[in-house]
Amino acid sequence: MNDELKYLSSRAAMGRLTRRNFLGRASALGLSAVAANTMLAGAVKAAGPKKGGTIKVGVEGGSSSDSLDPALSTNTTMGTVTRLWGEPLVELAAGGGLDGRVAESWEGSADASVWTFRIRQGITFSNGKEVTAEDVVATMDRHSGEDTKSGALGVMRGIKAMRAEGRDFIVELHEANADLPFLMTDYHLMIQPNGGKDDPSAMIGTGPYIIKSADPGVRYVAEKNPNHWDDSQGHADTIELLVINDDTARVAALQSGQVHMISRVPPRTAGLIARAPTINVHTKSGPGHYVFIAHVDTAPFNNPHVMMALKYGINRQEMVDKILFGYGSIGNDIPINASYPLFTPLPQREYDPEKAAFHMKKSEYDGPILLRTSDNSFPGAPDAAALFQQSCAAAGIKMDIKREPNDGYWSEVWNKQPFSTSYWSGRPVQDQMYSTAYLSTADWNDTRFKNPQFDQLLVAARAELDSAKRKQMYADMALILHNEGGLIAPMFNDFIDGVSDKIGGWDETAGFGLMNLYAPVKTWVTA
Picture (cartoon, one colour):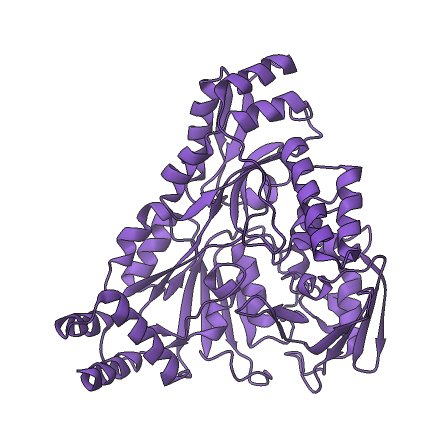
């Protein structure tokens, strides 16, 4: 029986036997569905990459207003596009460590205040120009300074000086930071010729693909870069990325075979989709979180009692049950959970209508709260908004909901309107998450949270090499944000991806969904 199963799994791995037929015959031979799927996954991996063909991807988040400049990427669509043509210095490894990309090695000084990245020798940009340490300096410089709009600005503020010496890119920090290499994985920091200063939207990088057409909010087509330095990526000849923001339409595209993989399968239908014989549903827990964000510098959210009323007025467990359907966990009004190193849990804030009513009365604000939402912010966001409205109503809090168009949500609502639904995919380490969205000076501080004590602790934690002391600093920061911030975080979502059985090479990764957005460049078409 073992020999027959091996034979069948090898044929399925090569695309000569459908997944449905393999599972059926494996079941007839006495193998459970879980064991059969595991065996098939191993056979596909052992068969190795198959070159050629086209991989079609359906992703959400894209908009007609999206910029092609990686500094301005704000959603899954553009994060995936930048992975096609560009590479950062380093990237997250599957086990949570780091892999070198443009940098082949890196080393910090004894106190972690100076870091040296050795640039990989002989690699070229897609325009044929060899990559230099000067290009890296120029890239980092473009993402720094008061005038930049880069999403990596919070990361770059810790840098005191940068220079190139031969093949080395050397960074001197204002304060020591043991996590600096992890910060360099930021998907905005794609290395570009002269840092992208000549044409930031040219999409010229060191990635495995060259963008041949770009229609923001609609479609992107990329062809294999024949001079890419890494044979372990870029197996398909062509990648076609379709922006499909509607959840139902995105799932239908996968089920009909219009695309090979989709991001963000709706939790409500994930279990049903997984039963299809030609589709695999991959789930991964992590740092992603679905949230309500309020600008705490704008009335009425600048009133601490209003914010506390809203935090007590939300039923987190109900949202996990009715919005995530088991694909996630409860949140606690901070962007950090157990997926982060040095995490310390806080006492869970519970739904309490009486406390919510007390704080709203104390605020002396009696007008309605306007909450803006869209399906594009996270799956089920309008339903989550309605649940929030209902739970607040039990406390006598009036909340109005305005449903915004999907297209343009990230450019016209998020980070502009004072109260809205949103999501964060999280970051590898606490310093990066806090530096990106909660440091007072961060360009992506989407709650307008500005707390000097929090900022001081964040800077001090970077330089603290004693893990116990650093952990306590992060715990103190979390408590400040929990009580004073504009973040209402009811739930941490699992990443749920849908993938055709015609795709091989899917693997576990750290980071975001879609294999940290690398699925199009690391997988291959088996049939």
